[in-house]
Image (cartoon, rainbow, N blue to C red):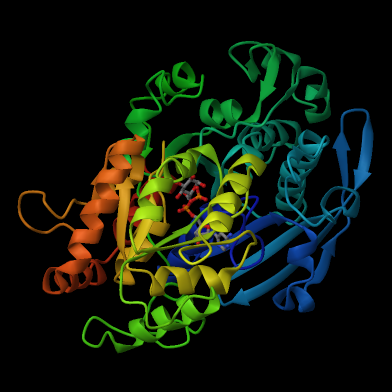
Length: 480
Ligand code: ADP
Ligand code: GLC
């Protein structure tokens, strides 16, 4: 098959969270299955400056219709591996910026124009290159308008660009809602401005457009697929999701072993396997040293790597200040995000510099070191569509402490659950719930035999793309 993937993030070129890893890993898994994959991403500065893009060639300089004006763009392409081509939809005015979505606390004010332009750039490139494909797979709100724009262009030009459109919801909490007055930039028919179209409480919702108008819809775990049909987790879109409830698929992401495997990880000071854990102790020492702690510290290390948002339950960690004050443990956090949460963590680290460390930067190398060198990985999320870090940590022999939501519920079994196959610690979503988990972890750490048993079980888990990639293939071609 020939498949287009359109997304706002793609590892290793541009990443703010798991979307980048998931889309890149899916693309890689499809290539391995023999498909031809064409990836479209905005030509952000980080992508254009990446060494892989140094040999990118300019293919087209289309004029993109944006309401009553035409804006020029540039389409560049490079191929990081056989079977995979990456197309950059460039326009410096929109994408030559340091961050994909905003600065500090605020989103860019022209995000609607930027992502309408991106989606239109994808359609125009497909049309001009006569790239007739089996499926166009769109991810999250930034590409929500793409299914509509694609069908609209097909009608206008009398050409079939794609047999299928597929839309995957990675996180319903980010919806791409903008003033309706910007709708005219889409050049879509006015009747789509209504409640059966893109309208959401008087505004335009790009996420809603994707959910309603793609031929097939999916999200990133079975539990999340159920959760987003409820008013608690539906973020106001539960009614829209319900209209497609029969077809909505919950397909759990896999992990990319070429990037996340302790046996081959080039970002670690030492590699290791389930047969020989020695390298894990080297990683542990290095992690402690890098944070100014005694490398010989023998107690439990709790690691955390995430976007610092309410989603990730950072406040629950902060609420357990007393635990970190009382116990001789280490807490190492790598993350950036909401200023309030950063501040809270910074204060915690300042109050207990011998126990708690915080780094507020995006650091891929350090994220691997925290994942490898910690004993426990904290992920007490309020909601978690899929979550990749809890899977990474399990295969790195680091035991995740998770709430029972979304993909966390689907990929982690508690160590005390029946069957004795557990690889993680499940906690309820409250400060006391997390405290109980932190204490269970500390007790497990003291029982070295059981600790290693649990670690090894996690390391032997697969988390491959097998089933999910086959399910997506089905969505790309199945009969109605
Ligand atoms: P989400 O997509 O909600 O952020 P996931 O668990 O799916 O959650 O993916 C998070 C990804 O982002 C992981 O690869 C994690 O290592 C990475 N990440 C988050 N914050 C940072 C950071 N500050 N530095 C490096 N990587 C980070
Ligand atoms: C989103 C979700 C996360 C998921 C990722 C990849 O960012 O928050 O749970 O793992 O997308 O699908």
